Length: 253
Image (cartoon, rainbow, N blue to C red; front, side, top):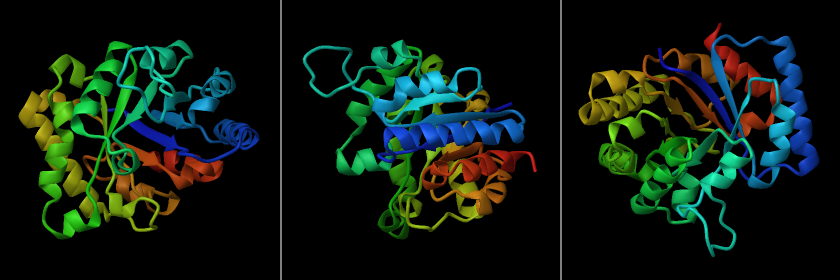
């Protein structure tokens, strides 16, 4: 059985007080809404990670970072290494998010290094892939996804088995647009087929693939019923505790 996962990417939002308040609200929601076999991950800004770890103790909620350096250590001002994240109790880390690809020009070479750094330090990468509207309408979506998957598929099998994939259609991030359940299933099935080509059916069937792109309480249940959709990478809706937990509960309805 693949893990059911709902991960909340807070991006560059919330003051320290607001982050604590949201975490407490999520804990309150969890106390009255028992989740069944759903793994919850919160992904705040770097500066809140250590504080968040203490607030999440004994909740069963996991902690993720939004990025990591491709370097182990050294004179790289402003960078944060995988070993640093591990040392404060971080469990997961986003890689290749479309905003990092767009604004920071992340490429396959750098992402390959980051994947290795995370796995070597026993953190789980959540590796993001997705096409723009222009790429979809231009018929390039499958080529784009295959190219973006390359750093992950180039891993050794025992390394690849340690990662989570997240499909995030760029045209549906923060726009209010959402892929239909048919579109989501079609792309998730395509991604799983690419994994099967690389590592076989056994590995492909065990790989969790999340959907990211304006997933919210009103559409989560329909998306999560798709055969190859194993959960969500949630943006804006993760900043509202009730919405975030409602999405996580969409598996159990």
